[in-house]
Image 1 (cartoon, rainbow, N blue to C red):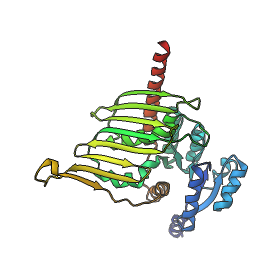
Image 2: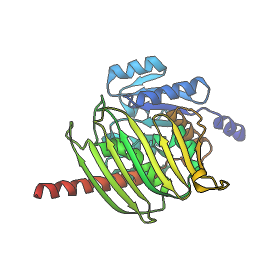
Image 3: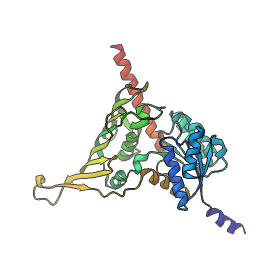
Image 4: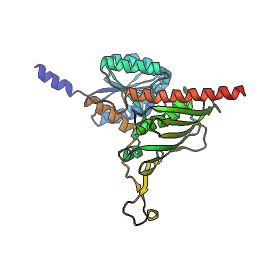
Length: 333
């Protein structure tokens, strides 16, 4: 009887909910609702402090509407948290301590201390903590990742028009953190940062809106990253050189290519080969959520761990510290 009961329990669908359904969170809700219709999980519903928004999104995608996330604590097996960053730690720790698997949007938290609390909560309960670094699941990055050898020099530009949404963090934590995570992931999570230089200024908001950073790694890799949320166009381009190729990655158009010498060419000038990679055009957020589900069901480590999220946050904090140092130098002059 006990064995049969365990088998039946193991086949029960995971119960999921989306907490915070603003500009990004509502897409978490949509994906959970779609996965529920496909039979992959049970969509419990959504939670948002804005009552009208909560009911509107719940009506659109099905499920129940909640105003207080605490009502979900004992009614779900996994959640996505897409609330303002300053609330991540409190909400995530409550669910993690309760054994609920948690996918929290980037940045993981507003401070390294809060990130450490979240990681510790996951370890105590055994619940999985994943951080939503969406660009890792962009089809262009997915196609490119197997071709990475040893990246040595990056030029990265991430520019957006000023966002029509609330801004609870500066451009480093809001926008640049995508590329800070990607660079560390491509260089190698075990490779330490040796030096950071950065400048940044507030332009429209009271926080830093535009920034340029130069990051050097102990293995000799260097990354120049420009991020802005006051541009007139949307740019999501990464170019880098590795030991055997020049790589172009465009997240916006989902394009990736490698340019290298053809070893069989009669002359080096005739031996340039451009390999445009084939893309499997899957929605990045859906791929991210499915990867989260897979890690739960297969009892694997999430593809973007809490430690990964903390590492990206630590680099972002370092960039902000260098920006503040630069501002102090300018003011002294």
